[in-house]
Image (cartoon, rainbow, N blue to C red):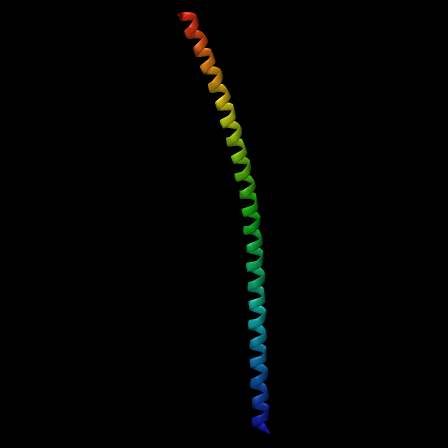
Length: 83
C-alpha cells in the first residue's frame, strides 16, 4: 500500500512539474508574440517612412531638374545678351 501511495505522490509531483513547465512555456510564447507584434509594427512604420522618403526624393529630383532647366535657359539668355 505504501508503494502505491509513494507512486501516486511521485506522479502528482511529476504532473505538477509538467503543468508548471507548460505554464512557463505559454508565458514565453505570449512574450515572444508580443515582441513579434511590436517588431512588425516598427517594420510597418519604417516601410511607411521609407516610402515617404522615396516620394520626397522623387519630388526633390523633379524640382532639381526644373531648376537646372531654368538655370540653363537663363545662362543661355545671358550668353546671347553678351554676344
